[in-house]
Each structure stands twice: as C-alpha cells, then as structure tokens.
Length: 255
Image (cartoon, rainbow, N blue to C red; front, top):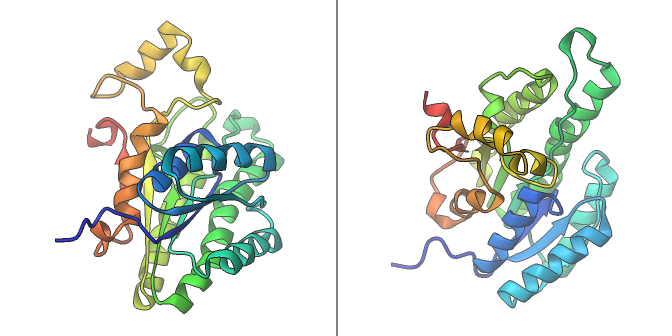
C-alpha cells in the first residue's frame, strides 16, 4: 500500500501563511512533501516563512503576497502559482482575525473588518483557487474555523463567533456543491492556540491556568498541534472526507 499521507508532487497554497497557525501549517505541508506557496499581505514575513520551509524540507517554497479581501489581488497570486507550478492541489485558508467588542456597543466598522477577512476572504480564496481545481478535476481545501464556530463565548467575541459560524457553513455548502467536480472542502477547528497574538496568555501563569483548566486534556494548544489534522485533510488519506470540521481542541467540544 502506498503512503496515503505523503504530499509529494502536490502544490499547496497557504493564505495567512505568516501567522502563527499559518506558518506551522505551511511548514508541515512542506516537510510532508508539498511544494508550498505562502501568501499574506506582508511580503517580508512570508519570505521568512518560505526560507524556513526550504531549510526544513529541502523543497522549493515560494512567497507571493496577496490581500484575501481583494479579489483581483488573490487572482494575481493564483495566476503566478499556476504559471510557476501548473496546478494547485491544496488550499489552506489559515488567515483570520478577532476584534473583541461589547455587543451592546459593537462598532459596525469593526464588524465589517472581521467579516471582510474571516468570511469574505475565505470565500474569495476558495472561489479563485476552486476554479483552478475544477479544471484539474480534483483538489483539497481546508478552511480555518474554530470551536467558536459552534460554541458561543463571552468577552466580546460575538463578531468572531459569527464569522467562524459562517466559515463552517461555507465549508459544508462548498463541499456539497463542488463534490461532483472532485473538490473536497473541510475545515480545521482549533480551540485557543498560542500565537504571537495570544502569547500574553502563556506568559501569565494565572491566565494560562484558567484557560487550560477549561480543556479536558489540561493544556492550551500550540500551532504544531494543528499540523496533523491538516496533513490528513489535504492528503489522499482523506479522499472520501468532505464537508467536515476536525476540532483540534483537547476534547473541549466533546462536552
């Protein structure tokens, strides 16, 4: 039997590839054999990630800047990838943001920013890369959801929860619509993960203990914890899996 988890010969695009989770996923895809294209708005940051992937995997990694909220920008990035590699086998949408606001006073400009990146950005990337995959007759997409896509949370997270709920339904709807053309669409649903934006939690023992105590496995997630699920969903091992969200959450959503 062949190694169904290998990604040798695959071309993977990771949007949000300069973020804490995105970088880990891009690196994991490269180590497992894929040619990785890292994308975000920050060219300097994705250049560094591409260098790390090349050093760790020995395979060429490419950094192509794009803004997921701008359809023409994403199209230009995709055109460059297809020009270089001739195809796109895997899309991982790892971008995301949160703006915490009191729901009684939630500024709609902040609400719109969240939906622009988390929801509109996801759909633009899926649509643009999806058209390449449709011509190929196959492809695998993994969107970044969250446990907050199915479980509400306090602390000003109404907007974030709403966007991740939308990502969940985009994932399921596209899985149904695109199954006949060979495109699988799934999602990754992390609990809290320590990234540059949440490092303050790990650095505060009392706060870290509070968050860890809510997780059945008793600890907070790290970016590296997300890699295995994405490798599975992107690989031939998941050839009959679509429309699903894998919650990498230490058992949090089991309750």
